[in-house]
Length: 302
Image 1 (tube, one colour):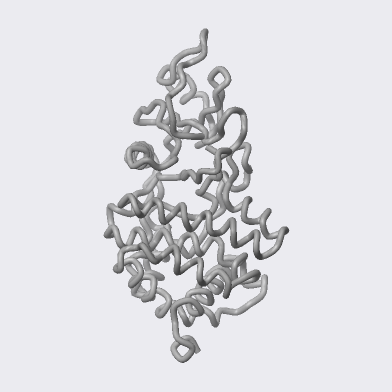
Image 2 (cartoon, rainbow, N blue to C red):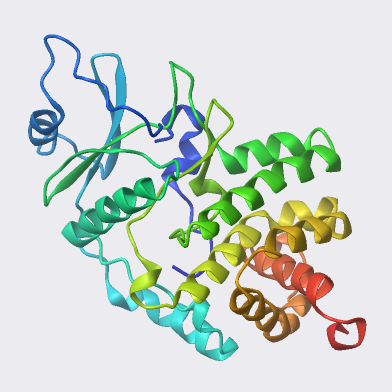
């Protein structure tokens, strides 16, 4: 998926009550209730939607059902954009859907959990579906991170930057473990009740087509893309120091690739303003503006 395009997400629309909950000891099924595997097998043919929340006893779980395979045609335009900008890290990662997406998500969730990251636990798996835990804790829901940012906006630039830094630190922690995310948009970061940032949505694996440095640079650009409108409107200069502090421990190749992106995207700052051109256009423009301010000299960014 192209980091410069943020599709609408059911997770973002549903709000914190719907968000997949945390690493830790796997709870036993409540007395009188079937185990996870039996529950998954029973519910798969009954569930009409691709993703839905359920309860097993007092535990909230999420069932993801294999859907139709995604057409490769949808990725051609995104690939063209990446080639035009000559930025391999923006190359779309095909998500073929179906059984392949289920297998990829289960594999990635297990690998990230083994790295010590907060992701939903895989409770049961078949070729056709996946049962995972919720990221809430003790009856309290996790919060979709973009909602946390939007709430901070109402409190002013200082609060917004404080929340935005949480996301930066969370991504830096992933990379410090030699790992990467799939779609590091703010809607796929979850603020858990204990304050830890968790991660969701791993139906594709950028590591299958990109190097580690490209995957990690892609994470940074994805997060920036999903937050750029808020930051550009509120505190672009103040955020510069936070951005560079988060990138400081990164592999030099990651920082180099982001600097290249800033250079090659600079012309996108000239995209038209105004809502009539669509929110995606404004996001791309904001990303280009911020990268130019943060990485280019005044002469090269003019």
